[in-house]
Image 1 (cartoon, rainbow, N blue to C red):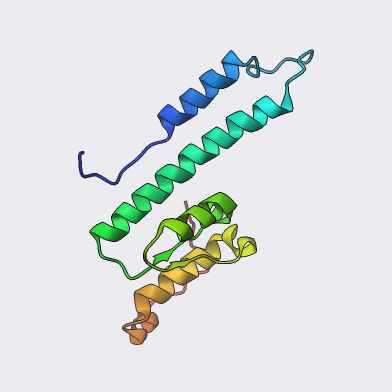
Image 2 (image 1 turned 180 degrees about the vertical axis):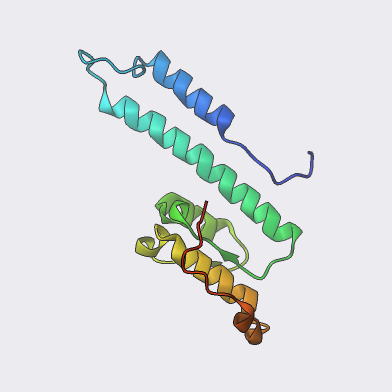
Amino acid sequence: MKNSLDFSFSGLKTAALRRAEEKGMYPPREDQNIDSQEVSEVAAAFQEAIVDTLVKRTLEAAQRYDVNGILMGGGVAANSQLREWMSDQSSTPVVVPRPGLCTDNAAMIGAAAFLRIKDNPDRIWDLDVIPNLRLG
């Protein structure tokens, strides 16, 4: 596992839960008066740890596989801190759809399809249309 690019956020989620418990934010109670500044601090620390991990692992993978660029997609790509850190720290070009398209996975699937067939455009005709195909 030393050279693995796998990662998990389960430990981080547990740490955030413990921090919320220590601050009296969890479990919530009706009579509770939670300091919004403390909630913001816990959330910001959680986000920063996730963004840091995503950027480091992505850049490590990009270097390991000698990629020409990084294409971000899916809902997580709408995160402004992730977009900024990835662009600032990457030595290869980073392409990110505008935030409104990041929440629509169709843009990500379309980009993946484009990259898959760009060197062999005739491959597209090998696809079957299955309008009632279940995704799950």
